Structures are given as C-alpha cells and as structure tokens.
Image 1 (spheres, rainbow, N blue to C red):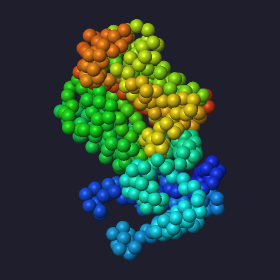
Image 2: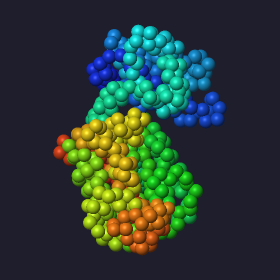
Image 3: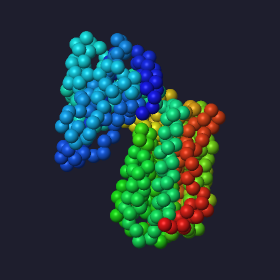
Image 4: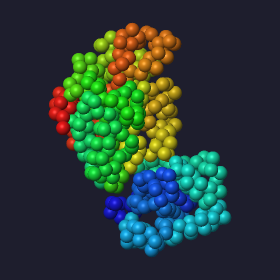
Length: 464
C-alpha cells in the first residue's frame, strides 16, 4: 500500500467532485474454479484499490459525502479461518492503514443503504463487471440484475476517471516496477524460444517469471506464431524456423499496477529481408507516435499520424497506392492496421475500461468514429501531462479480411490486392511500449527493452 495520506487525499478530492450523496464501493470476492474452496487467483477491484488500497476479499466501503463519514465493511477472520491461514489482522487494523477509523461487519452495509434509500438520497456506484457484485447491488439497492449498470452514477464515473487519468509520481514508479518485470519477460522469451518448441513452452516460462518477480500477470499472455491474430490466447502451435512471433505480455506489481509490452522477433534469431522491411515500417510508426505524443495533442491525431507512416511504408513496398492522406482518411490502411494505437494503463492494463471508454476517452466535442479500425481507438481526447498510454502500432495480414475486402472491391484505388496476396502467410508485427505524457512531450517508461532490428537479433540469436 501507499502511505495512508495518499488514500485520504484521494477520498477527500472525490468527495469534493461528487458533492453529495452516498458513494458505494464493492470490493471483489473469491471466485471458485470448480468448488467453493478451490478459487481462482484473487484480484481486488481497481476502484477499491485506488481509494482504500485493501487487497482482501469480501470487503465493501461507503463514503457518506453529506455527513463526511467513511466506513469499511468486512468480517474478521474466525478461528476456523486462522487454522488454515494463520493469524490475520482485524478489519479495523487493515482499515487504519488507509486512514479509515470506522469499520462495521459486512451485514451492516444493507442497513446503511436501506436508510439512504428511505431518505431519498442518491447512492453513487460505478458499473460492475462481476456477476456476484451485480447480484449484491440487487440485494442492497433493489436494482434488477439485468439493468443494474444502467443506474451507475455518471457523476461518479467522471469524477473517478478525472482523478485516475493523471498518474502521480508514486504511481508511475509502480508502473516502472512492472515494466522491469516485462523487460525480463521479453528478453527471456527472445532467448528461450527455439524451433520445435510449442508456444506454451515459452508462455509458461515467462508467466512463471512474472509470478516470481511481482504480482503475476496483468492479463493472459499473447504469445503466438499466428501473429496476424490480434489477441491469440491459444498456445498449441509448434514454432518453426522462419517464424515471426508476437509476445504481448504484461506484469502486475504487488500493488497491482500494470505493464503492457509487445515485441515481435524471429524464432531463428534473424529476420528475413521481407520481415525486416515490414518490421522497420512498424518501428518507424511507433517512434513517430511517441514523438507526436504531447500535451494538448488529441491522441486521435497521434493515431492517424502513426497510420500514415504505416501506409507510406506499405506504399513503398507496393502494397498500397494513391494519395496516402486520402487513404488513411477513408480507412483503407485498416486492412493492415485494424486497431487503435493504444490505451490508458495504470491499475488496469486497459485502465478504467470497466467504466465505459466513452466516459473518459471521448466527450461531447469528440465522438467515437464508426469507421472500421478507428472505432477501436480507446482514447481519443487531447493529452495532458501525467497520462500513461501504450503506443502499439502494427501491421497484420489477415487472410479472411483480405478476401472480404478484395471480394467487395473495397478501396481498390488505395490497395494493390495482387501484391497483398503475396503476403497472405506473413503473419503480423506489433511493437508496444508504455509512455507517460510530460510537460513538453512524452517519455518511454522503464528500462529500454530492445526493439531495433540489430538489438532484437542479437538477443534472439543468443539462445539459452
């Protein structure tokens, strides 16, 4: 946990932003895998962590803005629990670490909510993503489970998003701890991967590294020779000489701040000339995006500039043609780059995504695009110092998408399909770093993870 003053300040700022009512926070519960006592790895809700820092199941809290009260609800462990788990701090002892003096049994939460409802007071809560907490809202507030999130507080969402958007120095230090783990995961994968291995051999090796160095994985590892599939979580393919593999993986610190890093490397240790040419386009696009990331610049503009670099590079190889600005404006580049440039990162690997991206990544002035590719851009608004983003352009050759667009004669003025079809078996390339917006520009966080062609080849050729 951070110092208690951090959590006290966060809650004080939130009360000022929300203004009135009761703010309800539901922590996460244990989730059984196949029976009650055999659970998945516990992960606390990020909103709860941000304001209370208490990394324990079966907790809830309220902030009574009108009466300036803060209460943590939870049950102390019984003797039976202690037999299996050893001595445990009481709820009051835990709560004191985040500056909370008042605690109560979990059963008292229903009474507090019922009193607020009877008084006609507004009860603020954020959208819930776990079914048990959706059912808990039904019990506490009477909301129909199917429509519970329809009643989530827009004022609270925007207030929290405003706070969590800009990272403090202590948060950035935590993210850099996670990136240090990613450094080891990425370089180890380059050295460990060999022809004849299964993807899961490498995935398991780097997942174990993340667990041994911190809080484990921030998300399921994406490690695949089928790198044209953006989020491939299957690991049964055999690595072959000549393969390019994408390693998109991230770690969490013990305080649950995340990293998200992608590198693409040749299993054999050396890029072919065709692979090298395509890789250099993606790398230049990423370096351009980092250079373009500055305060007051809309991230949508950075995305489009990155897309133009990719389209220009593909034109130089003969895969695209015509006026590149017009091609990007029309969305023709999305055949090869069908996702957004990046996303926020912090306590969540896709930070605050459970609040709904349109609630913090867009606003009344900047509406989300409906264009294929561009509509997947998760954050588009002007940047401010302290925002932490990923920068992850890519080029992918997805046979099914190529067939669809070619069959529809889509963007034939910009795409040379004859040339594109020669790359059907190429796969894909993605390069990703985590960057923080500074007062005058941006900075790549953490120890530099090799991404220049020569540096990647040097590590990938030095097998362990």
